[in-house]
Amino acid sequence: MDVDDEASRILREVFGYPQFRGEQRQIISHLIAGGDALVLMPTGGGKSLCYQIPALARAGMGVVVSPLIALMQDQVAALQEAGVRAAALNSAMSWPEVLETERQARAGELELLYVAPERLLTERCLSLLDRCALALFAIDEAHCVSQWGHDFRPEYLQLAVLAQRYGGVPRVALTATADIATRREMIERLRLRDPRVFIASFDRPNIRYRIAEKDNPRRQLLRFIREEHAGESGIVYCLARASVEDTADFLVRQGVDALPYHAGLDSGTREDNQRRFIRDDGIVMVATIAFGMGIDKPDVRFVAHLDLPKSIEGYYQETGRAGRDGLPADAWMVYGLQDVVQQRRMIEQSEASADYKRVAGAKLDALLGLCETAQCRRVRLLDYFGEAATPCGNCDNCLDRPEEWDGTVAAQKLLSCIARCESATGFGFGAQHIIDILRGNRTAKVEQFRHEGLSTFGIGADLEVAQWRAVLRQLVMLRLVEVDTERYSVLRLTAACREVLRGQRTIRLRRAIDRGATRPAGRGAIDRTRVTGVQVARVLSAGSAPLDDDDTHLPLFQALRAWRLQVAREHGVPAYTVFHDSTLEEIARRRPGSTEELRTVSGVGAVKLERYGSAVLDVVQAAQH
Image (cartoon, rainbow, N blue to C red):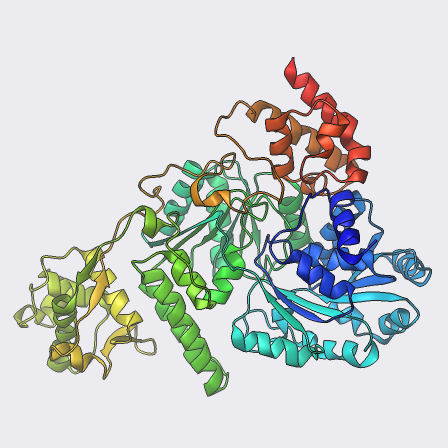
């Protein structure tokens, strides 16, 4: 049997998928042949199969370097459910469990071994691997090697030892997010041997990107969850630990099953909360970015940001945790001027080098450009990663196109007001005071400083407060105005504003739209049981039968989920390791009446068919009556 035939057999019989997606076949063939590779593939795009299948096809044991214990535990559980001899070595295991796993590895009884980088680098682990036949090394979340990246892990730098110690064993580095500089860094620091670089499309067509201005963000979040994702799993990211706990408490008081997660919680609480989120349905995890890297939960229906991330890479990585099963999901974010100020303050006050601050500032500017664009979000996002795209028809800007307007005069008014205030008093003022002057509001502070006598008093009454805030936010993004974070967030003009004040530069602005958590015009809330329009492509596992738009299958789908939950609890594993939602949905729609019909459903491999086939058919038959 040739390489392609063997890989296809494993894909079909072990994992239950009828055909490869995208470049999976080429990646797998290259690794089986013994070559090194760098693989960039979006979350949910099938990265795991790219190293799991070669490990099963080659002689010896595949070693997977994985950064999180929870992730490796879940992947091992899923592999074992599929009949693969897989195990892990991590600090959560008892000493007898460690000894037994080591024995199995030495005896050649394991096909895949998952290990954290810290443990892999110990002499005990390296000595163990010295005595094993090795099929390959897979380095997951390989962007952690980059000191410029958003998830830098110093121990990843030491993984170059694999090239020195096991030179003849193929290695593959995998990640969902990396710009050109980070790709070069991964190849150099991991010392990959003349690797082939595979870059899949960064597009996640099942994710709808939505960004709005902050206006009571927790209420906006609650409205979004209640209207569109009630009872569904999601992740809410906050910048500060206190905000995480306050937001989780707020959601719980409003009847949402929410849990907090941040580095300040004791390890037991963090592990319990993460375990509940992964294994139960309908949990909303409110977290800092300490949570989520490598989380292998396919049915996360939304990722929400209540604070601005640091970069597009971070935003893409975090939003990519939604909709890993390929079904529709939301990436939802609210932000405001204070978010911009806070992120720039963090950059300026850090002890990092000038080069690092310059790169961090450029990354933040790119993210602000994504937030403020009036064009398709997906086009802007993919362009950052060097990928051309056409308007998606599914993001908020495509569904409810914001108006662009000539904001030159408004910008001149605001810039002039800042200048005249400082000139009149000798010091600067914050955003609210400037807006009060522009709108002609005789506040106590305006009268205290006699700013009602300024020539700019009342010249901006034609715009509402929210509109002026949008103008100011965009001028800060354009670096025409800066916020002096050392002096009570007062506004300062930059040298670049002179061209605008002199009429030498036209300013195009995005008109503020008060759409907060409301559904984009033209489309209702996402129904995760339906896939329409641009989402049809790649939303279900390869080979899945086309789905119609009726919902008569829903009672059977819910019955199958209830059966799956019971089985998962009996086995002590996350529910999705038994079957993904997409597999259960296809079963519910097709209603197979025999083992042969069930065998053709995507995601039903030989072991799962033998283990669960009769029970699934019983659930289907019971629903018929």
